[in-house]
Length: 276
Image (tube, rainbow, N blue to C red; front, side):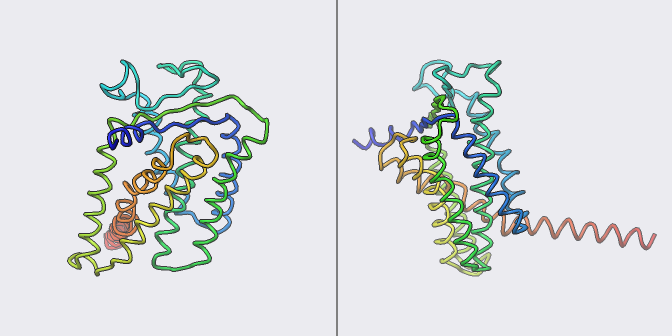
């Protein structure tokens, strides 16, 4: 029984109409407009940079990598069917139609998800509840509305079916979560490297679960992700938490350290030029 349950987690599918991509783009413009108006430049840059990474993983690596020995020959981890036609390798004449789906699932996803993540992490210190509620409501509200608007509006009802065969990746996902939170607990839970802060560990885990829920629940409730409640629960705990602790360390520890080093080097160069 458990084997059958875990096997069901290996096939992450979506079935949606092509105008979902256009409607998602419209809500992305609203999201970016609010971020720009509020001068949230760091979340935008963060989303763009990580969007490139997500694109490389999903639209390049997974699109070309073998799904493993449990699948027919030439089956890749990421597969697309658009208007009933399986997208070929090489993509050829279907480049632009597939690129629309790639943009939505990689870049739009990243600008929403990682932009929101930056704001949530910086608000652990700022504790601006109004900001947390505003951006969380806009993020989750947008993703809840998109699938239902797509079903109502007859803009382009071409069917898109995509599947992510995770049989060869499942162990890496679970390992990333375990290793990430062990590292996080060592840094913030032992008191040897930073002040002990168990609330922070719980906060980052909760943020990771919420981001996954914001993504997966609209897909589940709208029927785009035709999977059971057990898959939803699994995704909530594992999907984004495989990256959340590492991304917190990157944002709060690594990036400020690199910024200080760059500024220090620039000051040293200016002083050297001034004395030469």
